[in-house]
Length: 237
Image 1 (cartoon, rainbow, N blue to C red):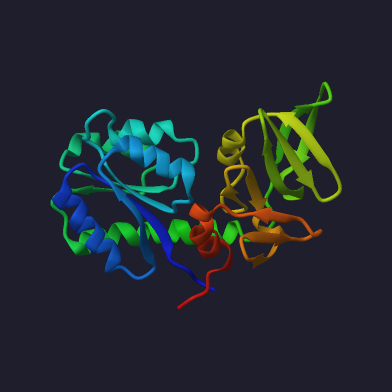
Image 2 (spheres, rainbow, N blue to C red; image 1 turned 45 degrees about the horizontal axis):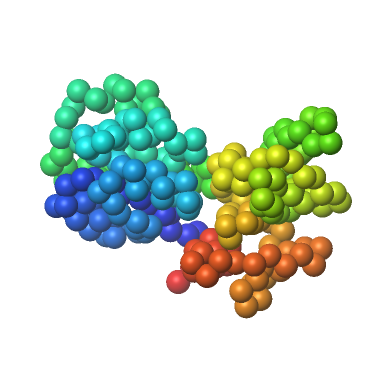
């Protein structure tokens, strides 16, 4: 089953942003998740919701596109858009998939997107199995390695988090926001200010709650409900 890849468009010029949005909307396989002129707002979006493909201007007030990308821990596939060719080397050092010089044509845009789609599909296929690696936390005065594949959900609890595994529960001094940025987005989803769920453990949506394996019921924030349904239960049109 295929789905559209979610795009964030960032450019402080209104006309450039408008044209980019039209190009994305005219491209099968892509959808506009959000547009913004502010790089600070862009960071908030990247930290708050899953973005597959980032179109990013370089010359912006307050924070350049290059520094924006350096500042986020979970980097989407990125295509830079700019009127200045001198930043190309640094852009590619940040693993940008392409570098669009303004004004660019739809054909040139499509060429860049096709390269991005190859990477995105590879990531989607490699993420289809179980999550790999482990999460190291301190609990009960000892350090514990938790296999990421065993994490069913995480609950924020004051300045602590409760990590629920298939057969255990671990409480550690940690920020839920930090865990959201650490756990792989293809396998985990923030559904509430206090909860992150492991996607593979979700069975169904029941009203405003998610039913997980093992009879756990997780509340879904009203503001996140549409996104949760899209991410966990979407089907092709």
